[in-house]
Image (cartoon, rainbow, N blue to C red):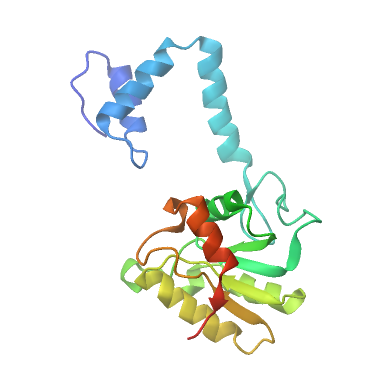
Length: 204
């Protein structure tokens, strides 16, 4: 726990918890806590209860592994989606980023990470087997590998390609409008949208 020079132990504890969040430094954590202190008891209770309910009730879609309020997420259950296309992404942030472009109308598959031996992340810890099962069970025409342009992303692309190349499906990847080494969630919507539209056949 962080030790802050505050007169209140309660304040110290609250700031310490906020400072544990990614991208939140001590000053920002203090500002957030002081902001909550200005709110009514009802507003603070609503805030805390919302977080508790989120953690307690959020589900993982049984099909695509995206976050969902029910067993099947709204994207997978949407009848207007093209169910012959599956866009493979690293995490939930990437689903949100691609959906914002409004340039893709297919389904997704969230891996939950990228292959990184140095970090102890192997293929078996990711949602790759479930992706292969979907290809076997669904009428999939195209798999779009939309992973970050990093060594880990490339390694994961190559691994997945090797596992699914025997299936009679088209395997594509994003056009390199997204800069090498960058993350999808930080790409602007126009660039990311064009990368999806102009996707190219993946070559191992």
